[in-house]
Length: 113
Length: 114
Image 1 (cartoon, rainbow over the protein chains, first blue to last red):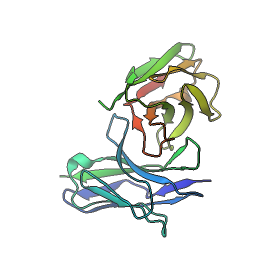
Image 2: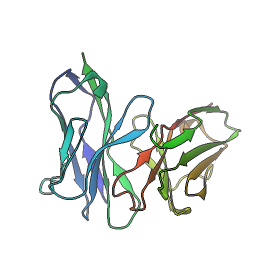
Image 3: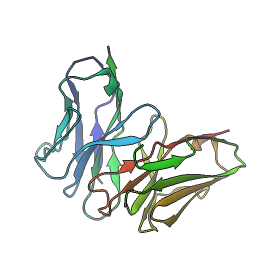
C-alpha cells in the first residue's frame, strides 16, 4: 500500500541555518504531495503542496519539489527562525479514488536563538 | 482561526461518561474527517464523511460514534471510553476532490480519560 517515510527527529538548528527534512513515498498511482506544520497546541496547517511531478510547492520561505524519479518531496528553507519550531508532516493523497491521505510520522524541529 | 472550529478545546471525562465533540466548517467543503493523534504514533484516520454519508470507517471501536447531520457539522459521540483513548482528536475538511488539494484542520480537542 501507499506509504510516507520522513526523517526522524528531533532536528535542532540555530537561527538562520539551512533546513532540510527528507521525505520519500511509495504510491501505485500519481499522488498529490503535501507538507503540513503543527505548532504547539494546534492542529495541522497545510504548508505547501504539489500535485504532479516536477511541481515545486512554496510558502513562507519553505520549498519542496515533487521528484518522481526519486519518489521524494524534501522540505527546505534557507534560513530558519525560532518561530519555525514545530512538527512537520509529509503526506500524500492518492488520486485514484479513495479518501485517504497518508501522513508521515512527523519531524519535530527546534530552532535556537 | 483556520475555518474549521472544534469544541471543546479540552475535555476531561470519566470512563462511564458520555460526551460529544463538535466540528464546524463554513468553507464550502463537503468532505469531513476525524483523526486521532496520540503521542509517538502516526495520525490515525477514524472516519470520513462525503456529502453527509460515511465513506470510511477504519475499524474504530463502537465506543466512538460519528454523526454528520449536514455538510457543515460533524460530531464524535463518546461513551465508556478507556484511558488509552486519551489523545488529540482532530477534525478536517476538504473540497469535493477527495483531498487532492489538501485538508483544512481544526485546532483539535485534547481529550483526557480518567
